[in-house]
Length: 302
Length: 275
Image (cartoon, rainbow over all chains, first blue to last red):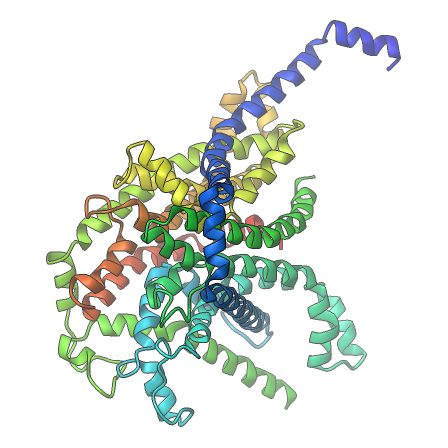
């Protein structure tokens, strides 16, 4: 179109242009309710947290927090919990997904549905059941491990400060590994059969195929799954709260638990100080995740 | 020979996974069917010696659980309706309209999913308090939207995008309005996906613990997950009743999942990451 033509369009919008603008407006209007609700439920609270955290009280709370010896411990706990839970879930999830694609497996759909169950039952229920399983005297974990001769005496899974975080991370793995299985399963389906066959023809063994063909092919999914697991682990509250409440003696207290404890004691400044730290830590991973997924989504959209 | 080893390894792996996945569920179910004295037997056993439904009778006749289940159902239904209305609107717009702010809006909603709930806890408590909705089902339902809206937006957006736009255009050409097109073409085609999205919203609310625990202070609005933990203090950790209530809390979820597994798996795969 010539410049004159373009100017004319601006001056007197053609019916088509007017319709296009109308459609844009309709589109925008349809997004508004959800945007307003989400802004009210996320942006407003986050701003409230920021405001309180940088106020005088908030800065004082930061001082108290950093000065207390427990703070470093909470950060360390959070790190240990996150690493164990994420690595565990990745290993179990990938193993399960590979099993689902074994050519010797019958009824793969049935097994996949079955293995999804931990992920779909309520967290509170799972945490409660595991709390019972981990009971020193009445729990089946100790009973079975004793019978198998793997431990010499009952372990205080939730009462021994040196094992409690690992035991809880196992529960988190139990919950989240099924989701990884789902993600990785989908990725495995998209590997062309010929590529694996070709490697086999060239004499590659099962492990070589896994290492040089399969794992590189699903690398993106693995990365996304890892990021998502980090975010979930960092934000996880229910399992630890229900099973131990952060104890014994703070041995399983991670950042979300610390926030809740401050909430219970009514220390609003402390809540906001810890919340700001948690927000910064988890948003770093969240932003990386969303940026990574966005490419995928735009590709899906076009 | 090699085939045999691989086949054996596969089934061994399945056996290990099955035990790891199902053992806790089996413990829950069987413990709920044990009489009180057997629960605290040493050494513990998986199966009950005598089977009994006493724990279930206790839960349904002599605890706050029935009320809590009702509260959970009401809250979850309210969440589902609000979520579908909000996300149906935004999801359709993101799938069908091209406008400049579409991408930032999509990202904004998606990022909302990543904000830790514990960070929002105190401000949401104050906000619901200011709306005078503390200890009400409506208060819980509003707070739960922060969990459901992001992913359901994405599920619906993808669901609509997968429907050829030509179907809607055909209605427009025949003289129908866009509203007709959506009502008579898009909605019916998208129905299974919408059902899965609605089910997802329902389940998220049904599962949710921390917001519900903070926003309720009495049995009036307390939901089942919160009541389950109250159980412990109410009867000095009555494990039989706790397990029975756990089973009741899980059964509807498992049934819903089995019924909608196909749509669920697809929706989640497309919402979290594209496979």
